[in-house]
Image 1 (cartoon, rainbow, N blue to C red):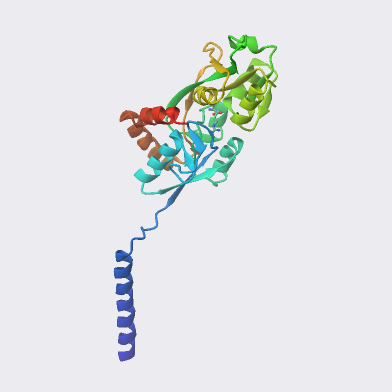
Image 2 (cartoon, rainbow, N blue to C red):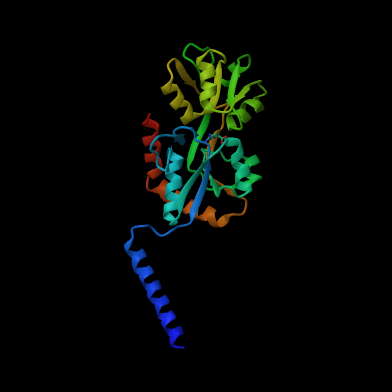
Length: 254
Ligand code: ARG
């Protein structure tokens, strides 16, 4: 009996010591992680950089992801993958949410749920400075480049024009710069980035041909718990002007 008491009290003091030590150490308590999938080929929304907001990733979406996680006492994790893979990754639970400047479409709504929108965009045409393309119909007899799986590809496909698709925006833009195609159809903010980064390009808009699009965060179908958390943070960030500030900050950068 005495022995048991001794053993027990030793165990208790060790336990106490452990508590004291851990309280003194600076290691933060382990928190749950929130994994966001993205395709970091889409400035100013997401891009790879040496010193980003989350690891090597930065951009408007990455800042939003960080805020969503932090407001819920979670640690944000970014998984970079092909844009085409995001919806499948959500469905099979590899990621909790997809944040990728992703436009809400009826087709996507069949496989995932979307948050409230946080950004309005439209497709535009990137052409050479001396191009004679002034509206979408002018693309009819031109070589068109799109990015695989983006809404720009869907638009051009719906217009019935032939096109070539690339995995990355930069690849399509290089094709245009090198004179191998006449026009790249891409989301407005990203298109502006590429035009600023490359000599001799300009943007042609045609609002009558391209409808406005809304970006939102996608979660697995039925994950209302996470969706509510996301919407709460988005609402706060929209109302207090944070999203507009992020838009301005990342559009000016680079
Ligand atoms: N808004 C377009 C879409 O939803 C393009 C998004 C591309 N995003 C990216 N992170 N690569 O299809």
